[in-house]
Amino acid sequence: MKKLTYISLALCCTLLTLGSCNRENLDFDTQNEQTENRPQGQVNLASLKLNVKTQVNITTRTIGATTRAEAVDVSGFLIRIFDRDNGMALVKEWSYGSMPEIFALPVGNYRVAAYSHEEKAAEFDRPFYYGEQDFSIVQDNITEVATIQCTLKSIMVTVEYDEALEALMDDDVQVTVTVGQGTLLFAKGEQRAGYFHAQNESDNLLTAELKGTIDEAMTTMSKGFNQIKAGEHRIVRYTLKGVNAGGDVESGNAQVTVGVDASCTTDDRNVVVDPTEEILPDSGGNTGGEGENPSPASQPTIVGSSFAGAPFDIRQTLSLPQGGCELKVMLKAPTGMSSVKVKIVSDQLTPELLSGVGLADEFDLVTGLSSNGMDLSAELKGLGFPVGSDFEGKTEVLFDISSFTSLLGIYQGTHRFVITVSDKSQPVLSATETLTILVQ
Image (cartoon, rainbow, N blue to C red; front, side, top):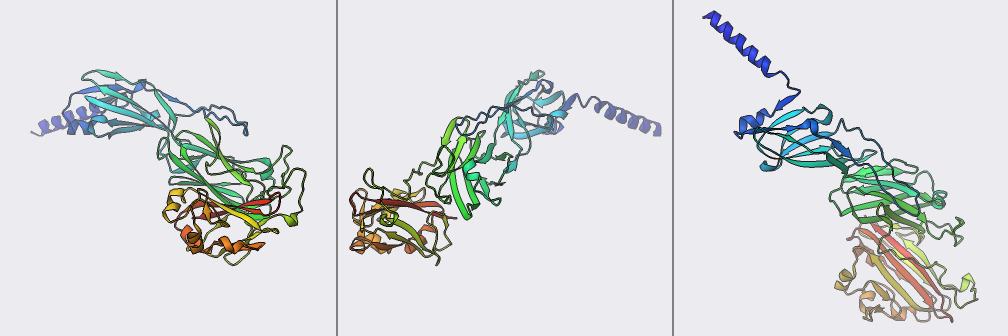
């Protein structure tokens, strides 16, 4: 009896040893074998090749970038097989370098996917590549898998500045870029590319916030770009407004806190600018008739009077505190004011929203009329704005926007108020400034 027991144990050990042979070349999904009784076939993973497209084409007038290709080590790529007949359940996973040559699967429909790595929301210098291929298993047959084309699925972002602006920047300048849940901080001089998870294939929101000292003034600028596609290389580029061909500031004034433009370039478009952004005339305004050169003392002016109790530069973006605050702008015209036009440029304060509260996105404080002729005098007075008779016989008027700031606090984003003051001289002189308010 003991001898029979020893023989049985030896036989079991022999069978276990045989069952473990050649496991590297032939692998079976034992879990599926236990849970399913479907007949089986095999997939030839030795035929699986990965082709990684690394080229990023950038065509832009301002950046001399070229198409480049880099070799990618695919040995660490993750290879996963999913069961398409079972709700895309994960069947098996390996690294590309450790896959078996042959893998047994129950008859059915499957998908094999290749991942460069486990993607994070945002990271520097680590592009995420992905590709997939569907295949089917036939009983007692070996299925060949075609080459998987892997492409960039993350959003590549770099930050650049033109030379004129960079010359005025201190070392504390930095840009915070956010896409979805991912955020990266690009310090001045950062040469690395950031890679962000694309939540959608063709419509992701990219926001870039610049902060730092430019020409000895603290500057904050926030801008968003939508319809960012997975696989794109986006270049957030900051330029100095009003720079001539020689690289000098045309206005002779280095107040770049307002003179900074943010644009976005990509591989299939040149420059993409915020559609609400418009090119504004120089703050010096219309110089009058041909050949005339009025003195600065006779020009209309628009000056920041008080923001949270302190004077401010109207050319600098204001970060609005929660609940609003005091905000006043001084309007001046030595010969009196014939019109004070205000245009609201904001993704949040749309014409439809403003009309719902009795306002418009364009109006004249002197006449109280909107751009389409509606009388908004009562509504504007209700907000504490100077209207109509408040301008009669005056060369200085305080434009108090304090009451309106509490309403602005509800709508996050950047709100621009383009103010144009025209005087009563002949020919008419005018000045335009943009009051920019950031609500976070």
